[in-house]
Length: 618
Image 1 (cartoon, rainbow, N blue to C red):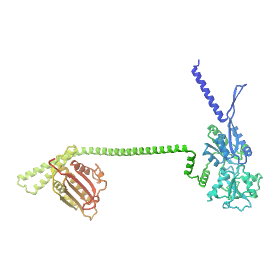
Image 2 (image 1 turned 90 degrees about the horizontal axis):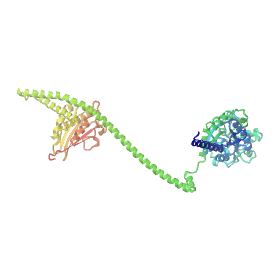
Image 3 (image 1 turned 120 degrees about the horizontal axis):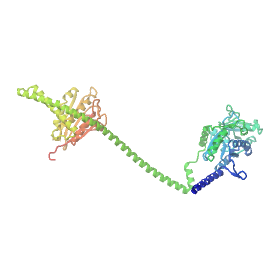
Image 4 (image 1 turned 60 degrees about the vertical axis):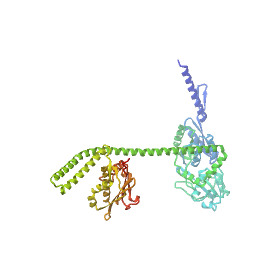
């Protein structure tokens, strides 16, 4: 048995389907009737109205295009097409009222309509003349054969007639030509009247002398001559051109032929079948012969029409935007105020979003910079860890040979002392070896303490002695490089609390850097290094100045770990110097000489060390 609920669902689905089907019949004209004898449903064909330009009148339009509609009705099953000859304005009105489903018109009218109505371009007509050319729309400017008008210039101030302002061949192409030739079409003619359709009265106006000239579509004059309506000897064409392969004279360039277009209300399967039927139309078919076409082809490029329309826009610029806006505001005050408020709110919201976006961007940039700094610090820490392991092992290995040198030198000194030769040159040499080995041992112990992060032993020391002891090590270097040493001490001497070995390392490294900088000084220039010590009231200031090339990078970059300007450098010297001075609660800085005052020269580099005065009461 069937569930009552399921039965109700089936009835509901059938009822919904019937509603949809009835809606579709209302849109496309589908009707149905029931044959009582045979109990069958007869479905009427879909009815479509096709608007065509009636450029030769309504009756001629029906006579020309209805066979084409019959051909489409036979080719597309379940459809019936009706031709509706109209002018430009009526075509726009009926499209707006959804009374037309298809149109056959020129490309200019198509572009005018497509800006307001959704249209699909299906096919372009091939002309029955000119070998089936698809470019068959243009303007022919005609005058009487006895007229004194021979050029476009002669048309200035004359009286003209045309078909319609929206006619591509009957008006727009000619206006585009005048604009291209440098004339201003707006104020060029004495008068210009539009007679509409059919086209024959336009030619008659010229023949009868009512007007000076007429703008007619391409081949209109030749067709009227062929039909016996006018005589060829009565007319002459202005700015005449006979394109190769064409049979008619034209005054302008040629544009694409008429097009077949569909409104957006037509189902896609219908437009597809219609397009196929148009492409399949034989050139000898009665519908093609009556419509004066050799068939239809795919829509061709409309670049020429687009360029023409741009020229026409240049010719007739729209009114200023502010005037249009003010007129609209006067007619729609309520809507205008609402739009103005919406604009203000949107502007404020946009500015707020931009502010938040900039805030987030700055935060992201700062975060990215911090991440890069952290990555660089991590890389340096990894390098420092590796160097620490190497340095720890190296210090351990060097400690034994240094201790052996110290013991051998002390043993030699003791032996000479027992033999009474304590005043000999050999004793003095052994004493120097012993002093330097002891100093080397102290440096190794300091390196081990530094690697172990142990606190150095500070004591009261005098900077004079530390500087002198450091300079003694470089006497031979000064002489070898022919460098002049300038030394100066000013102020009242006092002691500082510090690590003598660590400060000696700092001074020795800085003096060695200055000597290395002398290698880059040009030959013939005096090489000088100045070491000054000034005692102030609360601190001692040491300056090491050279007249070398100066700093090649920023000071902060040079004092970073593993940054070196030397090919064989490790990039640790300045970093260690800064750390040692920082441990002494002092200040360490690098500058170029031209950045400071009261220096003996303006070229080179100056290193400044500031160490606080030692106060035993603290």
